[in-house]
Image 1 (cartoon, rainbow, N blue to C red):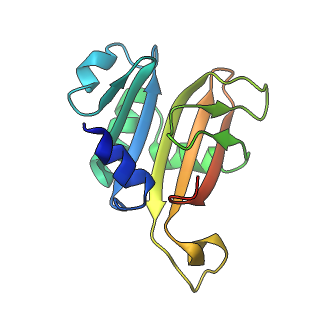
Image 2 (image 1 turned 120 degrees about the vertical axis):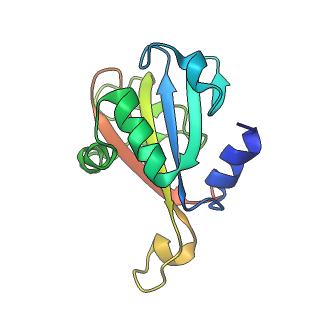
Length: 141
């Protein structure tokens, strides 16, 4: 994956895609996924079409993507704008193991940040097991 695919997602230009970050050790062979994404020093980041991305997330992590998102919504934390890290609200650790994100197009009827632009919804899990979330307007971080 070219870095531009990630940049396009973070700019809110790929609302039909999802982004998935998997740290080393989450999957047996992250190099095998690098054909579909961007290989990083500490893991792999994929930006893929929504439905196949949710399926890939479930296959790689053993978690249903939307159930994971729902669990993570209960706790707000800090997720890095590049989707590859953050800070756990429970333990303060920065060893983020999983990130799942999607973009929601602007919706003036809902108001708030949804009226300001495309909103990035990001859900993460720390090595301690805590799942948490953060959302922001695309391009503002």
